Structure formats: C-alpha cells, structure tokens
Amino acid sequence: MSSPEHLQQKTMVKHVMTNSVVSIDSTVTATDAAKMMEDVGVGAIVVLENNLPVGIITDRDFAIKITAHSYPIDTPVRRIMSSPLISVDPDSDLWIASDLMSTRNVRKLPVIEDDKVVGILTSSDLVKHIADH
Image (cartoon, rainbow, N blue to C red; front, top):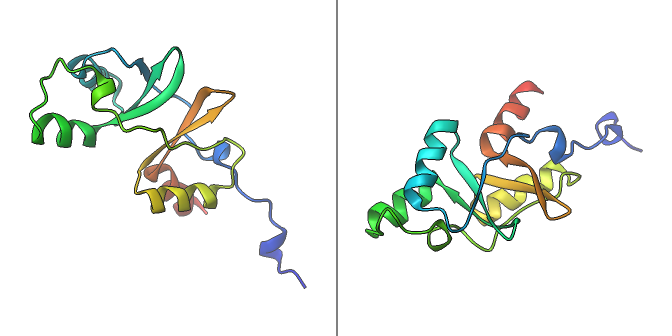
C-alpha cells in the first residue's frame, strides 16, 4: 500500500533551478570573467565553445587556480574552467540531481536541454527548496 508521500509528484530540477545563467566564450580572460561575475553578482559562469556548454568557472576556480597556482590573470577561462561539464536535464528528479551534486562534490549544476543552458541548480537553491517545504 502506498503512503500519501509516494503519490506526490516528484519535484523536477526545472521547478527549483535559477533561470538566469551567465555564460561566456572559452577565450575570455579570467580577469574579464571575474569582473562579469562581480557585476552580475553570480558565483559561476558557464563556459561555451562554438555556443556549446563545455565547462564552468566558479569563484572557487579563481581562488584555487589563479591565486594558489599563480596563473596570470589574463589566462583564458578554458585553462581554469572545470571540465568536463557535469550537468543535468531540466526534467530530472531533484533528488537525483542533489545526489549527483553530493557525489561529484559540486555546488553548482548547469541545467542543459538540447545543448543549451536553460538554468543552474545551486546548493543554495536546494536549501531554499527544503526550507520552503
């Protein structure tokens, strides 16, 4: 016999993700990417090559790769991005996406549909969703 919880529709990533995502070409310099992140107020930017998502650069990438490894600030983001890109489909179950974030140790998960970035799921989005329910 099913309990009422099992009858509830599963929450999909698209219901919790942040819809606005910043993306840049892989040739953009680390300095320009950092300025963009500051101007827009985001902690991650999806990196594109030929308009296809290939990686992500996060504030942590700057801390580790630029600062700790002394990369020059004019380094193209393709050299410091996290790649291959770990992503999820907008219709994926939220708990599967959450498990992926946990096992892969990522806090920001781009949401991709038909090779286009349609959103981003962050650990903050998950916490807010849990708090609201």
